[in-house]
Amino acid sequence: MTDKKNKGVARTALIVALVAIGLYIATIVLNG
Amino acid sequence: MSSTTAAAAHDDHHHGPEKGLLRWVKTTNHKDIGTLYMWFAFIMLLIGGALAMGIRSELLQPGLQLFEPQVFNQLTTMHGLIMVFGAIMPAFVGLANWLIPMMVGAPDMALPRMNNWSFWILPFAGAILLSTFFMEGGAPAFGWTFYAPLSTTFAPDSTDFFIFAVHLLGFSSIMGAINIIATVLNMKAPEMRLMDMPLFVWTWLITSFLLIGAMPVLAGAVTMMLTDRNFGTAFFDATGGGDPVMFQHIFWFFGHPEVYIMILPAFGIISHIIPTFARKPLFGYSSMVYATASIAFLSYIVWAHHMFLTGMPVAGELYFMYATMLIAVPTGVKVFNWVATMWKGSMTFETPMLWALSFVFLFTIGGFSGLMLGIAPADIQYHDTYFVVAHFHYVLVTGALWGIIAAVFYWLPKWTGKMYNEPLAKVHFWLALISVNVTFFPQHFLGLAGMPRRIPDYALQFADFNYISSIGSFAFGLSFILFTYIVVDCIRNGKPADARPWGSAKGLEWTLATPVAYHTFDEPPTRAEILAESQHS
Image (cartoon, rainbow over all chains, first blue to last red; front, side, top):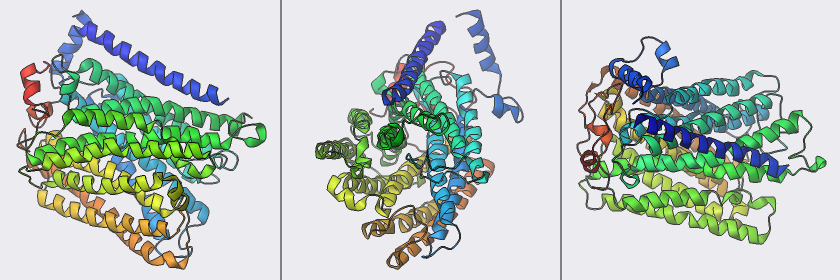
């Protein structure tokens, strides 16, 4: 159960972090 | 369960906090980190408040009294930056840290080590920002909106330190948002459904998505500023093919959601306090959730109402004006629900309720003046006047800060295990309520009469209202000395509080013993416990 939860946390955190990094890059690239 | 996690769980059961100062440096406990955030925010509030006292001292009378205009501009810029990024946002993250795990029946935040890192970035970022006051050329003086080319071509060298500080603050906020999203979605009690979650958790979940959408855009803006200033790019330089107005579009694409980042958690807090002291379930729980999500969505598509005077096509003005008006609908739903919750309730007026009630009145004033500013033709007169200053202080002081203070009084007995001095807290409330209105209400009249913002001197016809506003601000500043005394007195000398000091309060946090233990919810709450403490039961 705990391992399953840890995987869920990692997956959620990774997806959200990738969205944030993507937005950061997009802001600069689209304005370039 | 793996042996590693079993060992960790074993440690959690039997070990309390580390002794000494290192406890606060190394802590991964959500309650400790929440406390750190709250004290950091309070210190920054006092520093930002001291700068505000400087601003109002200069404006007490017409003519230059205390500061050179350049220094005055540094004060207004740093006041705004410190209050937004150093005080209001960290205070809400502190509340989230303290409350969200307890409200969703989780033992801690999902990513405790990252939580520690999120906090410990802040003091360094704050110190870097404040250190610019002591640099050659002084602190940034281009306003908290740091429009290019003021912040690129014509800014002091210290601006690079400001950029670094904003990068750090943004990084901290993004990590905080990731943690909250992961905690709410993955760590809430297995028996808790999304529509069982308390409103504070809902508003913070939605705020976290706003942070994830907005903060990287701010980071992108300051990165482009950095390269324009130091590496020969021309993102915002018209002579190199760039566009300074694009800076404003990017800034406000971050800046408008930022406003809701600072107010949505306050909506959640008020949605807890009013039902408790009206002794009725919250009216329209699900409509509150949908209204919060609607406000968040709309906040992304209205940014150019801050830029009506940059010269945009009429079709653009009309679109941004009408989209802005739309925000009044879900906000009106919220105000209606709070009033309907109180309707025929057995109301009492303890200190948290006084702050919550005045929030509803005063935030609504700020909301209405926002609607006035959102009307494109009217904004031609209001833009960059003291009317704008009055508007956003009603939203951010009597909105966001009011929500934070209401939360402090509401949950302080749970955090400390002690009760604050209720009569003294009421004296503080009335002092703050009267003085804040004496400070900011006359600024509406100054703005309508044409007094520009961000000026250290003004024409004689503005003298009386400025004098009144400054006197009010000094009293408001003094009220925080009393607030500090009340909180410290509660921690040191307060009488023991009950586990549920407000008899009719609902929520899993009130099921915990008072003072709340260092580790809580080793076992998740059952479905029956969740339903019994639900806001719509």
